[in-house]
Length: 168
Image (cartoon, rainbow, N blue to C red):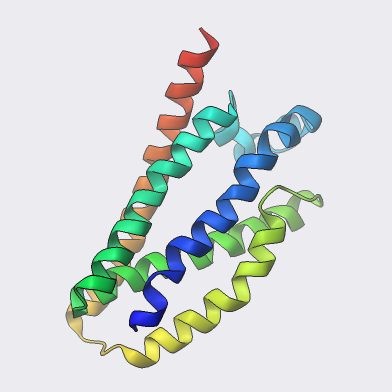
């Protein structure tokens, strides 16, 4: 498994660079999306590139921290947490692809989602073959996924608060 651990933060940051670079311009040029898809775009109202970069940085910390810990201190607990984070990131890629299909438009994140999805799936399959699954693993993997979902909500709130401060 050791050869897979550090691929998680690499895939994450590669993908999120496309988002950081592209979303500001995308929202400026596609304001009508906020009216057409209010539920989907609510998370990005008051978007600033600086606030989004801060949110990405905050999200990067658990991806990098768990990956680094698993790399240097391999154990079943860290393997399961890492696997849950890798599943979360892979689902994140799928969500972006579905969003783009749903709105019938390119969104910044689509290209790297398409690039990162196949290797992520291969990594998950190979990592699953290296892991031993028991009750603890089946508890920790969903816990990591739920933790990342909660962290995503926190990152978005951080993005909004920082964006509000910039606009004052």
